[in-house]
Image 1 (cartoon, rainbow, N blue to C red):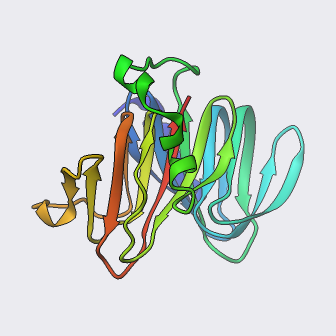
Image 2 (image 1 turned 45 degrees about the horizontal axis):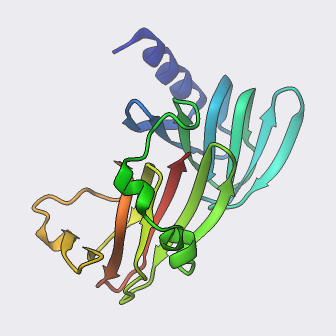
Length: 224
C-alpha cells in the first residue's frame, strides 16, 4: 500500500470518517465518504472533482472563506483547485460520492460509428423522464437516473464515457435498438451488491426494462 494512501486512511480514521475507494482507473477515482455528526475532515485539495450528496445533512467548509451549507441529497458541486477542510455540523450522517476527474476535457475520441449516433437519441432528449441533469459544465454532465417499477424506458444512447454509481438494481433487462438482450440481472451468477461503481464506455441506443417492484436508481457522471 502506498505511503500517501496509508497516511490518508489514518487521517480519515482519526477524524471519524468512513472513506472507501470504489473505483480507480485512468479516467476517474471514485470515493464513497460517510461522516457522522461532529466528524471532521482535515485540509485537502480538489483539483478537478465533482461531489454528489447522497443524503441530506449540514456541513461546514473552511477554506478561503467559511461556509455553512444545508446539503440536499442528489445535488452536486464542481470543485476545481479548491483547498478546504470540512465538518459535519448537523444531526444526520453525511454521505457523499466524490469523483476525481484525471484527464482534461476532450481526452477521449469518438469512433466513426459513435459520431453517427443522432443527437435526438441523447438520453436527456430521448428519455427525459428517466434522466435528470443535476449538474453540467464544460467538463462533465451529472445525471440522476431512475426507472420506475415495471417501466420500459424509451430508446436512448450515451455518447460520452461515464462513471455509473448504481444505488438500486433489483431485476432489470437491457436491450439494444434491435431488441437484442444485452444484460439480464437474472443471468448473473454473482451479481454485484448495490451500491457499486462501474466504468462505462459510450453506449449505443438501448433501453432498460425494470421488472422489479422497486425503482432502478443510479447516478451517471459523463465525461466531456
